[in-house]
Image (cartoon, rainbow, N blue to C red):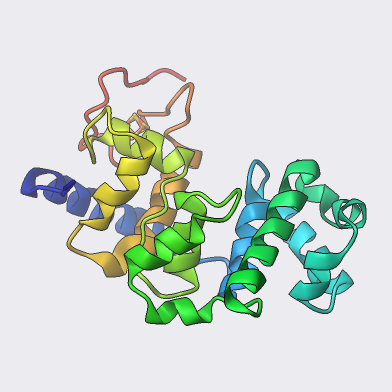
Length: 227
Ligand code: SF4
């Protein structure tokens, strides 16, 4: 079983404390019911927060229920969410997820998962087409109040460079790894602060190590101190 040992836990604690001091304790964009968060997270794939929010607002203003979104002509739904991009992939995934929830549960609601264990919830959510561990973790930690640590591309890249996990660990195992940290209440804020670090300093191609707030903790061998 994957498990964070004291060496990695200490590094995680130091990074968390430094990022909390630098960025503050961040808040999620807004609390949404779990089905709303699931759809919103599917919309967020490969787009920015502004276009995700525009698409989600369009969706909520156009349709009176998730049943209506599930049953509408896909072409019509594509027009409504077009601003989020990749509508030809996102529409089938959204409608398949809504169909799966209603077929399996009888109604389009996910709050009943609060009664299940985190592992059962993860297993159930990831049966849906287009719902991987990252999307399921976001729904769990931000809507179902369950321990989960979403690992998106920023978190995966930055955590590897910072030495918060074994370097060659897969993204799937990284989800399991961070779950064994001893401070589950900090999963949501730490996830958000690592994303901010990735966006602001630890860019994929040319990290700005000179101004990075965790440079002295970071173990990345190819740091960039140029402009
Ligand atoms: S020091 Fe550089 S590589 Fe390390 S986390 Fe900061 S920006 Fe990324």
